[in-house]
Each structure stands twice: as structure tokens, then as C-alpha cells.
Image (cartoon, rainbow, N blue to C red; front, side, top):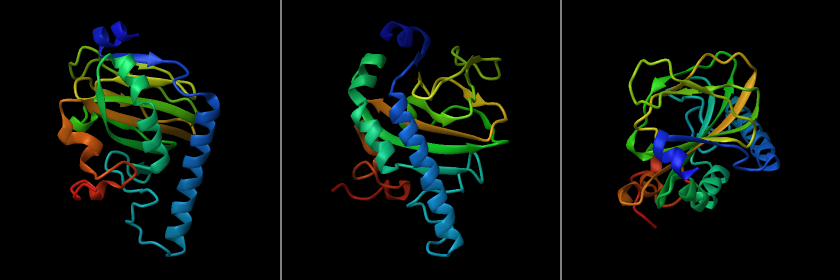
Length: 208
């Protein structure tokens, strides 16, 4: 597996987490999305509050997303050593990011920012939705299609490889991204947050 990632800059790992873990996190994500909707509807929090997630994701507007969720950042933390073996190098945690996709969503072709140097996308549940990436690093190519089952993960070098998803034809799809960086990039630890589990607007807060 280490050689596969080194050679191709990506690797598919089946059953990276158990089906039970995936089912739990999918249900958790769906429930948290509903909590955000109710809290906003009842005017208990402002629409732009990010503590329970957001519907103002720049890449996919009007779709529920959550940066640095406590449960997802815990997944990021607890699986670091496992990911280090797959990528064959020491890593530091940056952040997690999860979405509950809906019908019609599309993830445009893109490369990631530096804090997403070494990434994984995990399929938590819902309808199948392939992700595409271009291993050559060239832009505008056809790319390869990767299909994941709940618990499977695609590891890839997000800053080097263009990746995307075509318009979603299903109803719901829960995914979480786990982002790491090389250990020499210590300034990117926790993506600039004091510790894991905090929202993105605390990236420049003084370390605890």
C-alpha cells in the first residue's frame, strides 16, 4: 500500500473504518444537519453561526458542511498513525471537513490549499457518488473514477492532483475529509487553531 501511494500519489483503502463507525458518523452528521436547520428556523442562533455547521460553503452553496467538528476531528486524530503507515511518512493533523451532499450538488475540478497537502475522503453513507482525480497532476484531463463504499477511503495528494465530482443524482451522501500535512510544516498544525475540535474562525487564536 505504501508503494502504491508513493508511486501514484493516491491509494484506495477499503474498510479504513468499520461499517459500524461509518453508520454512526453518517447518522450523527445527518442529525447535526437537522439540528442546524431547526436552530436557525427557530431563530435560536444566527444563520451565519458555524458552531453547528454551515450552509454557506463556498464550493457547494446551500449544502450542509462542518469544519472541525469534534467527532470528525477525533477521527482525524485517532487515525493519524494508521494514515502515516499508508502514506509512509510522519504527519501532523490539520483539520477535518464533512458534508451532507444533496441531489444536484457538484464539486468542481480543483486542487487544495497547503493545509490539505495529504488528504483522505471517507464515504460515511447514503447514495454512491464517485470521485474523480487526475494522477498525472495535469489539469483538464479525463481522470480516473473511484467508487467508495461506507467505511472506504481515498487517500490523495490534494495540492498536486486535480479532483472533482460530477453532479450528484442521489438524495444524500455523507463524506468526511481528513487533512494532514508533512511534519516539517509545523505552522499548519491544527490548521492554525489552538487545538482540534474548534471552528475555522479561530485559526489565528493564540495557542492554549
